[in-house]
Image 1 (cartoon, protein in one colour):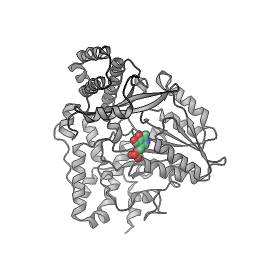
Image 2 (image 1 turned 135 degrees about the horizontal axis):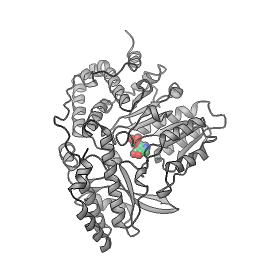
Image 3 (image 1 turned 30 degrees about the vertical axis):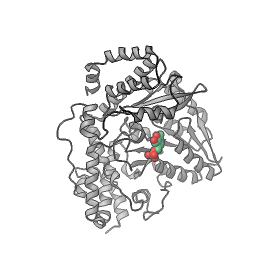
Image 4 (image 1 turned 180 degrees about the vertical axis):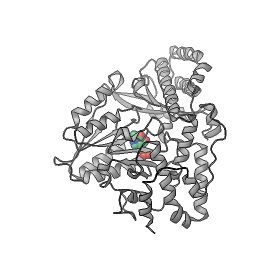
Length: 453
Ligand SMILES: Cc1ncc(COP(=O)(O)O)c(C=O)c1O
């Protein structure tokens, strides 16, 4: 009999069939019995444990549906029934089926994909591996963007410095200057002489959706390796790896796919597959890409096994089509940002066609300092969770709100935020008047149109 690692590697070539990882584990997964009839608050009461208040910060750490949580609990119970059998006999075949289902969802090839605990893990493994290869005659210049997530920028600096290299930054335009063409023009200007380009699919904290397919194409034309940070993309927008064609693409399961925390996928191109290694060298070492990544020490692999449940749940919410969920959340986020910028008499950070389910609004100058605002919004009833951050536009350091809209949010959450915000920042009477005007316009039609999947 072939070894466990060889079997796992071989299984990556098998198609996805009717058997699920839950069949292998002997875990009963009960999908919601009835059809999904409405998103928004009613869904939150049935499926989430968020309590009262408005949770408009899903982009921060995500929130798993009760369906996914129950699936995870059943898997953990199975693991504790007989840990030796679980790890020795069941885990690898179950992981294989879970990974192949995930690959199918993002139109990727399972043999070029692995599960890792999170996006930072994937990015560090990728950059440390790629910076080591002798592809770069002029030294290792790693390109990041002005929107790159702080920890990812640190990982890029660290990987470049190990090879005596450095990082360079593509400045991403904001407000009405931000178009796909302008982003591509700025990348074009910086790619010459670069070794690796790291960029976001959906940026945090701004919510900007980047033209990743076109940037990857530009990278190929300039012989630059592309590393896409898709921490926010899976479940927020379509991810089609076949079309994107990145050298490295990684995305978190716990944010918009609403999986449990502790699972991201890493997908690689054929070109880099054999040079990319996990940071942790373990039993699969030197046995090829799939074997090296499948075992990362004894830990709880449950979040990697609940990915198919999370995909099913998202698909259920979209009544068979996840696109419906992406569209609905996008509409709510754009409506929220437009409404708030109108009542606050400020601007949104990006045009609505450039964002997905997170949108940002500038706070007025008289608003409270960031930390104070966060605390007052989140601590007193009704509690409102929303991201507040500094961002530089036209050399001015301004404060912004990032409104995340998930399937359990609706217009009432946004109105709760608006009312509380106006009170907390002691907005002028004109802002309250505007809010009342907007409230009067919010009627069941908007609700219906958001939920009219
Ligand atoms: C754009 C972006 N990249 C990377 C990360 C890191 O994700 P994780 O902490 O799951 O590794 C985040 C987290 O919010 C993010 O927003």
